Amino acid sequence: MKKRVVAVSCMFAVAAFATVSFADTKKGQKIDGKREFEEHCTACHKDGGNIVNPARTLSKKDREANGVKNVRDIVAKMRKPGPGMTAFDKKTISDKEAKAIAAYILKTFK
Image 1 (cartoon, rainbow, N blue to C red):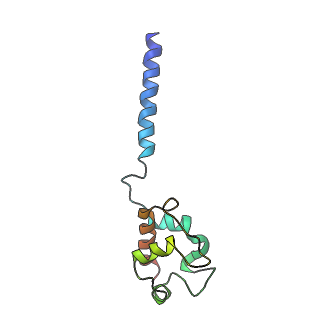
Image 2: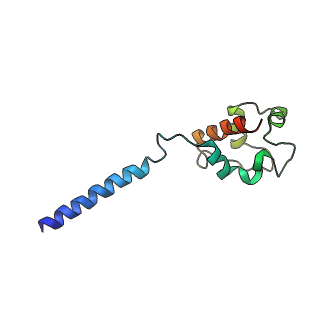
Image 3: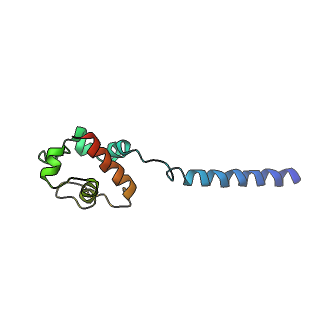
């Protein structure tokens, strides 16, 4: 009986630590903007292009011509895009993830 109580206690302890560890996997980790971009954006913006509207690529020239100049502008477009683009709410892409994607876009597509 004593061994059974010890075994069950150990199992509960392991489960508790595992739960905490899984819950914190994103917390404190740096978000990879490239990975997030590939997950959410590449279907339409492969290599910085735009399969829906070729005049609105992610190149600096096209972004700036369309009033998209910084991280805040990119995140705003992600939240409330124009016709043809999927809107990404905060449940789908958190603010931190959206900012990481925006930084990746600014750094990558010149």
